Amino acid sequence: MRIIVFTVALLVLIIAMSWYGTAYLEASAGALLELLQTVESQIQTGNWTATEATLHRVTELWNETHLFWKILIDHRETDEIETALTRLQSFAAIHRQGEALSELAVLRFRLQHIPAKERLLLSNIF
Image 1 (cartoon, rainbow, N blue to C red):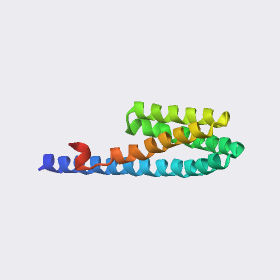
Image 2: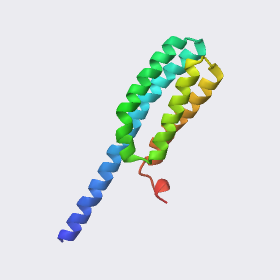
Image 3: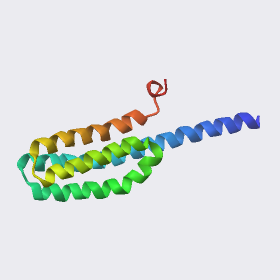
Image 4: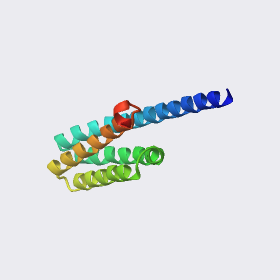
């Protein structure tokens, strides 16, 4: 009987931690995506000073969240996000609108893709 109780408790703990991890990924990605929406409108209007300031806020927020993300997901994926963010900052610094918007789309895709990929669904397990 103890084995069954222990097994059920362990299963509940695993599901709860998975749910919490997914909720954290979605919330932190959502906060970053909101800032990136602002960055997109600033790039489209050519407001490069505001773009760089907002990208600085994105970088600060990413630096706060990426440590926990590295616990939950593959390090390669966080490295790809950091690479895209760095490239976006570089393109914004030299006022390259097309390249900046392209890299912004890549960054947005990666931030949307990871929480969806990490959800506890049968399609993600099998």
